[in-house]
Amino acid sequence: MDEQTYIESGILELYVAGSLSEAENAEVYKMLIKHPEVLQEVLDIETAIVKLTKEIAPKNNVISFSTILSKITNNNTDSKVVSIAKPRNKWYSSLGWAAAVVLGAGMLWLNNQNNTLETTISEIETEKDFFEIQIEDLSSDLADSKKIINVFRDKNIISVPLAGQAIYPEAYAKAYWNKADDTVYFDLEGLPEPPEGKVYQIWSLTLNPLTPTSLGTIDDFKTDDKKIFSLKNANASQAFGITLEPEGGSVSPTLEQLYTLGVIES
Image 1 (tube, rainbow, N blue to C red):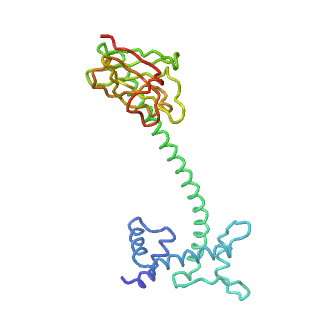
Image 2 (image 1 turned 90 degrees about the horizontal axis):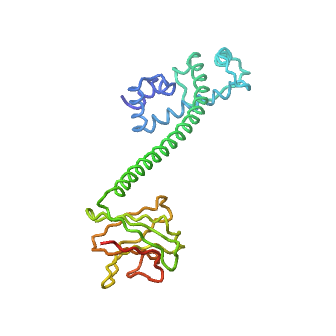
């Protein structure tokens, strides 16, 4: 079927009126995408409905079917004529125009309702996404907490208290070294918040001779509420120390900024 025959078939009016089945709507949609002239025809039909609705609707916005019908069928020369693009026989019938007018008014109302509904749905989906993220975070925190508790209760874990040093005697920390998987958990709740541009750096130490090996920096100290951090340690450590270093860490510890130190009991 060519475009003009398709346009004159009347299916586009039914499409605008919402009277087609899902399969028929899909067929019309394909034609709209493929043929610009068919799309323009649909736009012309919708424009005609809106223009006619505005013309005959009473100021109080109450639409009477009898009023619509009388205005459509009235041939009095004093009546104002509404110009409608591309009229066709299928749209000359009084009943057809009346349906179009009611449809036009309904479309305006439904459009407003749909916009409100879409906004509400969007807000609900946003809240749903937020709560799902919160649940995932809580689940992750719970799993981490269970893992940490199991580590602390493991009889094979080496527990090392780290005492405060001269720069900050009130400081304290504790290390839990699991030699089975070379992981050390550091509880740093007893350290003050580092100043801007500074981070805590943790060192594995051998004492004779004194040889420090960096285990890494604690970059998220300020944002981690639990203040428990895990670092890998495959060294033959005899002590652990924590210093305050510039962001990015240092090659060797700044001993003047040594906050805590703890020797591993043999």
